[in-house]
Image 1 (cartoon, helix red, strand yellow):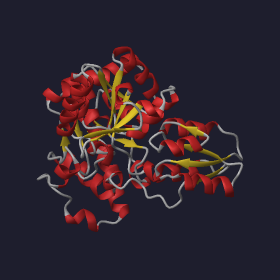
Image 2 (cartoon, one colour):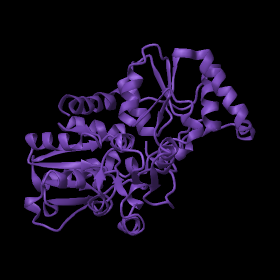
Image 3 (cartoon, one colour):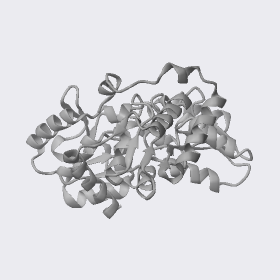
Length: 368
């Protein structure tokens, strides 16, 4: 489901009464349902969630970790995923048939995931295989729809995370001489560069124009990058880096690999969300950091480490807007509707899509 489909969904919307409730009442209602349901309810919360929501999470983490944790909750009948749509899909892929996954607000999508829909991908595959023959293996970032994961699984490929992308790209080249990396061009480019693949051996597939754009010889292309990006991380710039270098020359800059190549090269460290968190936690008191990732998480890291000087690489950065669709009213509504026996927004991946998508996930888990 892309963002357009989500916004036009016929699913029920938040009742007005929840919008009028004070935060204190909403919190009390959430606590009541959690107490009544106990271990039958599991609430995973992504790192980018608002503080008002993350306080009720039974586990915090990135998307794959939370989906895997959901699968280990053997007593959980309901999983209310505080994240975005593709994350809830992954949780549904990994959990049992009798466990149901819900998303508090169906508008909580991911612009990156929506930049590669299945129809575009199928058309791209036809044209790319006509150009290069049977020489391409598809990889997809887990930040993609179940349909894209399924496509990748059907064509011999696998999913990747920002933590294991290098391992999976290395594996891909043992299978085929070329790879198609969906949907985030920046993670694909940064990973390939770190593995020693020159930029002239990369090209970008534009799904709107349906053309392959590169600076080198097309026959020598090894990495085909899908023209997609994270709307949050792409807003960090080298201007931001230059400002930090000028104002705080001793400050280390750490960024997520969803940032552009120019920003990653200009920074001191690049790493996954978990790597960023661990780097800060393991640094000595008094150390100074500028972090290039989502603002809710950065603010939480700042609050957790008052003994360190921590800034956002771009202090004008907004939080992830679609992730922030999940709020106290929507979470309360989802939980109370669940308790009343008519929960909204169940996320269910149809089996013809789910089967190959699980294959793509399992290939990653087997090789990373």
